[in-house]
Each structure stands twice: as structure tokens, then as C-alpha cells.
Image (tube, rainbow, N blue to C red; front, top):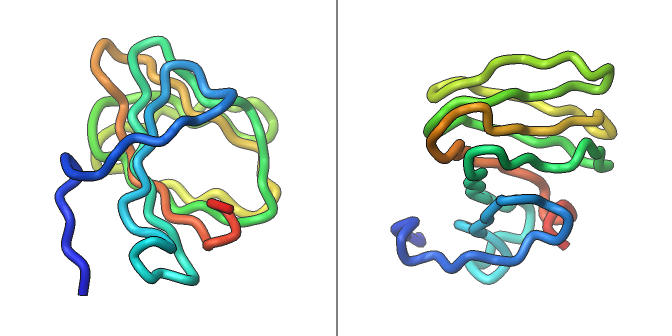
Length: 114
């Protein structure tokens, strides 16, 4: 069993993401060979690219509020406590629309963090 505090997990570089911080909370370094739990923090005005992957995402909004943009460009308001499922190859983007950090947990298969 592994127990961690988010404050003890280092930040990793995220190329192509504007004003976004990422932490790998649980991953291969912890012995997890199938799933990776990541924590993202998007600063006010920040966004992830409008992109897709060949793996699904499970997302839980932890703090703040923002927009989840789908494949067709539709904007969906999301806030603390909301859950988002992004299917394989589904284009998506997250954008902070608030004045505080927009934080979320994102769980992907191991190949999503390779």
C-alpha cells in the first residue's frame, strides 16, 4: 500500500500546455503498471490544448471551475465535485474560466503517461 500527500509530489513539465502544472500522484514509480493518477492545476486564463489520445480519461474536478470543450467545440461548464469521462480518441480541452486555480484529478491507463 502506498499513501501520499499531494504536497509531497513533485511537479512535472507539461509541454504545450499554457499555465498548467501536473503531478503524477500514483504511477509506475509506485508499482502501478496499469493506471496512472495525475493531478492538474490550471491557472486563471490557462488552458490545455484541444487534443485527443487513443486512451480514455476519468476526471474529477477538485477545485475551481472551468470549461470542458468536446470534439465539436461545445463548451460544458464544470466545477468542484463534477466528474468527466473522455472516451478514446475523443477531442477535448480544459480551460480555467475562474479567478482561482482550476484543479482536477485525471486517471488514465499506463500508456497514457508513457
